Length: 183
Image (cartoon, rainbow, N blue to C red):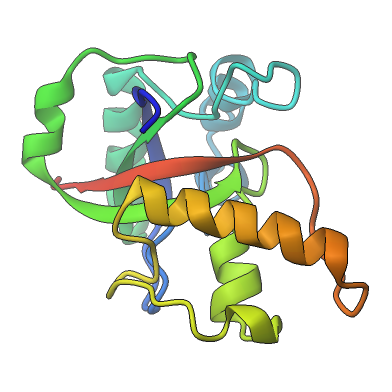
């Protein structure tokens, strides 16, 4: 297994769904809040993965996360905080004890930022790829282990190159270990 780094947090608008992964309404205050602070901070400090392959769009600034939580509560927006661990080197947090404060949801296979497009959500849960319909996911719609996610990525690559029936999103996907942090 590859060495995972705890990269930081992603704030995601809470939704009712069988999928509990990284793709969702992330960093929603960029659009819903009248306070430009949130979008400016995001653009300067979080949105880096498109320009740096060693980076994942996570936040390590707990003060910013606290402001995010306060503004979300003020606006009546339900949210959750995801602690993300990936193979990417940056950013990195050293507060590994935060894992104890949350629940490990599982492993996703998705973009390192932007839309956080998840191959699990769009290729497996959607049911559009028949070869993936028998893949077992946990109660959060994720893989239980890193190795399961890795096997899926290899199987997906094989289907992509050997079958012209489907259109696949292509890109630089990574495996996320996701922990929902209690707030």
